[in-house]
Length: 89
Image 1 (cartoon, rainbow, N blue to C red):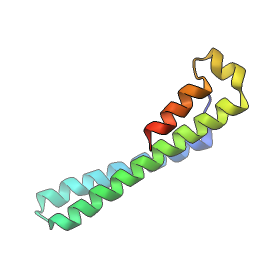
Image 2: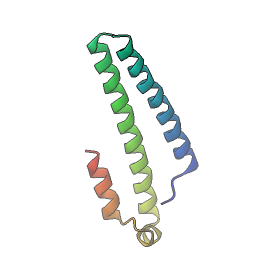
Image 3: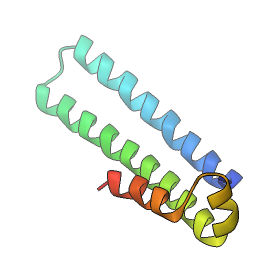
């Protein structure tokens, strides 16, 4: 499966941001911050990670639809990619 370079760069940027959020959550725990604030940050990090997942699968699905024979040869049938997409639901 070929994912466009700009998509990979965007996903990596998002993941670095999420890493920062997780480090912030660690610090919040060490600082004994309010539980509600921590939960809010955990929720935000989780949603950001879901966006990475959706963007990756969407790029893969786009590639598979545009290159059905090649994707099938590489083991990425449309059914397989749809199953990945449904795991996100």
